[in-house]
Length: 106
Image (cartoon, rainbow, N blue to C red; front, side, top):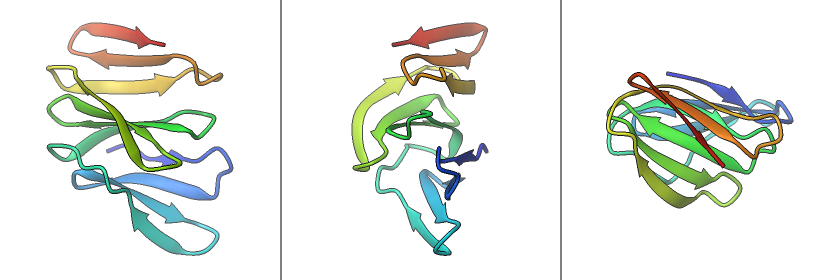
């Protein structure tokens, strides 16, 4: 799985089955986000501004989540396993590799 730090460095995100778990490193608390993927999470990508989280399961089904509210904004089916996902430094672009393809989203 993949792990991500929030931009302030105080929270660590990691896959926990079919959901994302948030560990508050300052308070020492752990919470799990409510949105659930269909299968176990394989890739997490948090935007540098900390507002959007892409959570992709092993089968390539993704959730775009408003990280602040914990709400699912949209569901994306990449149809194959996603190898990697990264946000641009300005949080405007998302690059996703799956199969032999590279997709860039705005």
